[in-house]
Length: 374
Image (cartoon, rainbow, N blue to C red; front, side, top):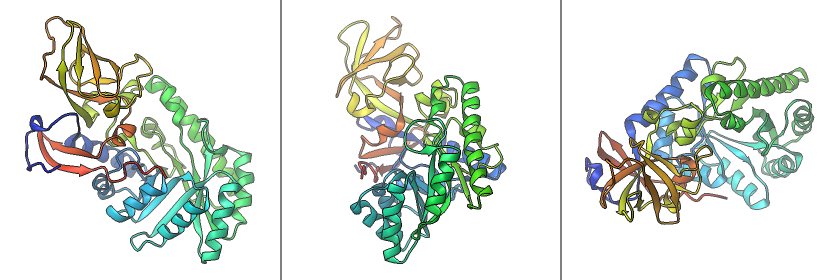
């Protein structure tokens, strides 16, 4: 899409993802300042935005490198962003992916490419392939500190795995990492604090076990946005891999880690039908806002600045808005902005987004790493 610079946002066709540059830049600066004040590094997870231009803004603010979910994302960022230090926080399994990994490691832009592993079944094939290529791959061991996804249990099980990985010829242990996703279930900011501190305690205790066993642990890395304001102050945690902080969303608002004024991403939508006095329909359904619903009140997103409106239901192309105030009823043609429940999958639904400052478009950015699921 070609849009003349400084075009008023009201002239954009809908539905359209809008990035408020002032708010996004403030979010980036805030985390960078917290990290600098507490001697931590930032390695933002670009799976949230998937936009090289945004990655470059994060790097310019002081980020050490970036985190990617998949090799495809890392390949895009190596080509199109300024990142020269990339961590793939995912288990890389299979000959095809290992071949791509080692090829990417030789990219002229990259100074460092590291990966995660949580088992010998992941680490051994990578080590073997790297050894044959005459190189070594830095590995961070994924440690489960309470969010039951990937990761070897914290404490002695992680130590046992680290001993085995340390003996492999084609990899080097670069540290430990965890995703403390359980903090999102805490419900309150006080609950987030308690949960994040316990997760950090478990990861730090595990790092101490490895060090006492003679295994160097350079990086001790955590990743959840709501936890960052607390974990950044904990001695021994070296790195923050937050992703959602760059935009924030309704999920962050629900657990108290962001306000509406700190949400930098909205979806512009147009009212296309008002079939009853209580219901209006917008041109943004699940293909636009995702099917992620609020855990607390079931809505598909928050209508910005309109507490009298509830995004109550959605099908693929339609969003149903419940009107609760008889004095502020919507009309066909009205425009709304939706703060999505979860920004990460929203970005993966859109080819491009509008970068907006004070109501005018500064740029249209391609979501260059969209769809990179392999």
